[in-house]
Amino acid sequence: MMKWYVFSFVLVLVLGVCLPAQAAGTELMTAFSLRVTVVENGVEYEWEYDSPNHYEYEEGNQVIKGKEAKEKVEQMAGQLQLSEETEVKDLVERVKSSTHPNIERLDIRFMNGESKLFTWVWEE
Image 1 (tube, one colour):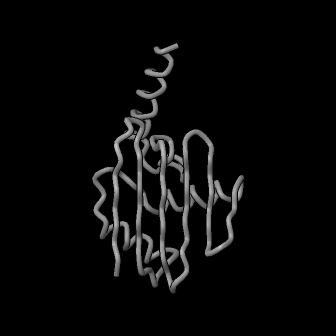
Image 2 (image 1 turned 45 degrees about the vertical axis):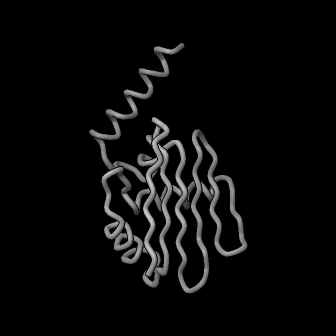
Image 3 (image 1 turned 60 degrees about the vertical axis):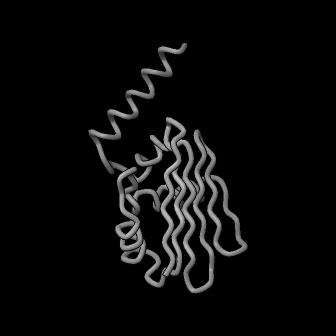
């Protein structure tokens, strides 16, 4: 059983390195947890993913779960092209140029499969 987990983990890592950004959901394969918060024009947007299949999207006071939330989270993950070495200024530019041109704040929390937490925070 343990061999299967090790093999699966190695396979995910190899595919993550060899096939970067093949599909929007690929970034989530190596993530154990992802939280992205954007504030634009006073409205807070939040994308959440917890392995293996919890997706949630919030826009202001509206909370969306399930398939629609999964699509929103995968879209944001693809847009960010997040890696552990990514600079926050690059993430802000990616968000500005695609979906939130008037971004006021960006907060990203990413926990990888090794339970290492990576944090990016930017405020205008």
